[in-house]
Length: 400
Image (cartoon, rainbow, N blue to C red):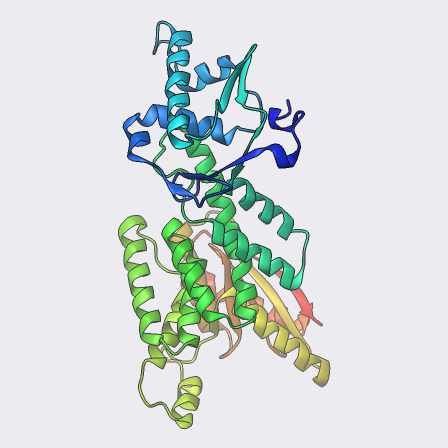
């Protein structure tokens, strides 16, 4: 059904009531700024407040008494749920009168349903937030970025954080997911424009919403390093590592560790040009091994190699190596990783795709040579780990 405020009243005749639901619960109308929720409202109790918030969230439709009873009174919770509903509506109307003393009846009873008065239109920050997210998907370039940033500015915190009702928890997770997705979409755009301060601000708020998303720590560390704040980047990573270990017993990804290593290196004071070149070119402390890197870095290396091949006319080959049957998950994965790092040439890049699966590039090798390398790796694995029952599989693709 349509909202009654659309019936027989022009836009100019409607009274606009604004509510903010993200971060806190506050209200106002078109003549005043949003006002913090009064102590009187808090004294009415959590259930009354949740009931009012449910009516506000569902302002655009008619709400039946059956729906309200089902949401707020379980079958055995009240012997007379109809009376309980009427008492609740009386409390809510009194509450609305205290919130908006200049207004007449705001929430009305109709045959078979309840609805906001037809001359009232309710505006919510949650609805504007959703609209901006949807509209942004239709845009490109600067307009896309502007809409994403406007949406982020509206998200002042979780949806009705003090409301622990089931209906509120579902919406809280929905808006939280939508917000985190917007943050993930905007960060690469800001990084491309080198807007480091904006990146830090967004990452700090997103981290408070969900600290487990490694992406936010990574972007914030890069921004801090770019601003010359390597010390802060190291401290941020240390705190993130500690929290992930304490709460989930999880180690950091290779991506975070590489940014951390960069930050630690940049903490060294007074680096001259010769010092920087030395850091870049220093030998691998673990000896002459293949180059293990993140998948993102692997992609960049492959892109550079393709440009080189276009000029030189030479060839290189990509190989995916995976564990197949009778695998001891973590043990055989470590064994395979060791064989790859020690069995390949110095500088051949290797990246982990998933547990027990790796992609590598054999620089300067054609497909025939790649098969010889694979045969040698397979033989080395089973010779070194004779008791392992793991089987290796390979897929080869020439890099053109």
